[in-house]
Amino acid sequence: MHKTPLEPAAPWYLRLGAWIGIGTSPGALMAGAGMASVGAPVATVVGIVVGVVLLTTLAVANGARGQVLRAPTVEMAQRVFGERVGPAVVAALITMGVAGWSGVYFGVTGAATSDLLGIPVWAVSLPMGGGVWLVYGGGFRRWNLLVALTGVASVAVALFAYGAIEASAPVAPAAPNTIGQQAGQALLVAGLVVSFAAVFALRSPDFTWDARHRRDVWRAGGVLALTLVVFLLLGAGIYRQLGEWDLAQLVTRSTMPALGAILLTLSAVAPVVSGLHSGALGLSQVAGWRPRPGAAVVLGTAMALGATQFHVRLLGFMAVIGAVLAPVIPVLLFAGPRYRPRHGWAAWFVGSASSLVLASMDVPVHVVAGLCVSVAGMVVASWLDPDG
Image (cartoon, rainbow, N blue to C red):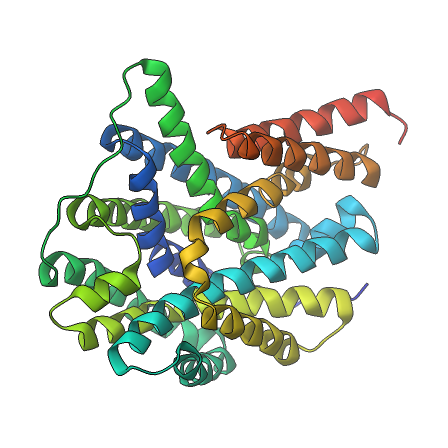
């Protein structure tokens, strides 16, 4: 297992870009709109707030543990799941997750520009991929300078959608009649929030392991929570106003599609570069690759997914990610000296399996339930097998 060398602690603002990039991404706008399509207005708002609190708690707790251990995500997985298979599996899932999300961004930006210019989506992905690669190669300092541009562009996309597209009359989900139905819709939305950023919450130690102080992680978490609430609610408002969650379709319908496509492309820069960073780090930890080849693999996969317009499968992708990856986080958090690798494997398995089974049954609480089962699995495993 390749170890991450100890480096001088990084100033907190050099790692803030990843947290801002998640909260201000076009994916957050689309996810918020998707949540509004499955929840009544009040349930959507409540679910978004509850989900952001839960997600931020997971991301900050995981990032703080990485900061204490001075270990990124894959090294933490090594401590919990053993030397070989565990870290490889976690790194592979993270890499697939970030490649998938990057594919969503390539897909939505490529579809918008493709419709505008009348060219294939893959032809749009090539120059965008080249630009992203240049930003990634510039390092964290240059990347953080562009985060502000990305956030402003995402806000502009939301405002653009409101102002440049004629409002339609979307059919809102039927208002729930009972408190139980209202709670069910709110928990469904909360689970989708966790699913939206489950990959980031799992890999948050990648951006905090070399932080100078614990409070640096809390600062980053506060920024994530604030930006994510705003952008998810903006996305929900877009759906209520326009009846659409696909930003590519909204840009195409606008009175100034060229401007919309440019803003949409700029808004995707930070989350894609963040994905390249974590994917490269995971492959480096497991396979001993240098960062650039690993980032190139993630970028190539994302571009290929984008060419298939992967973004139209957003809600299904989020459901799977939430079920498979979210239950890993409690395992990393609760593992201590008396826990053994088999405890972690068992807890992860029962948590993910429970979530997937409930999802197949259309039970709205499947993501939250998977997290709870994972925690219970750690407790029960250590109780039944106290000596490891």
